Image 1 (spheres, helix red, strand yellow):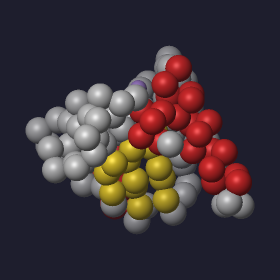
Image 2: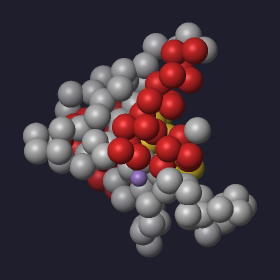
Image 3: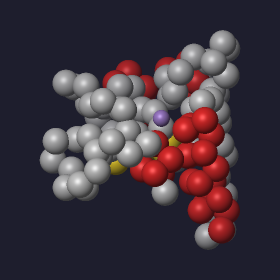
Length: 117
Ligand SMILES: [Mn+2]
């Protein structure tokens, strides 16, 4: 799982980590270092991730290149985010973002932690 270093990102990461721990699924949490790794899931960060599935929390909706790398490597990328949806969205296995036009959820302005929850 790839989180974010701000408050929303850390809470998102905690909620999702606790869920997988509670149901007995091993999960590795990576919160990118703002200075060394940059923001969110990205190509550089992917160099040190070996996984079958990657879930993002509070980031990922603009990660076009990272999604491409995941696809090439056979990694299922599940993006959960609440940030503004760009014109072109990542080619991911799944995207959960209430700001997507076709999302029926009635509250598009929720935070990333609520999306994760
Ligand atoms: Mn956020």
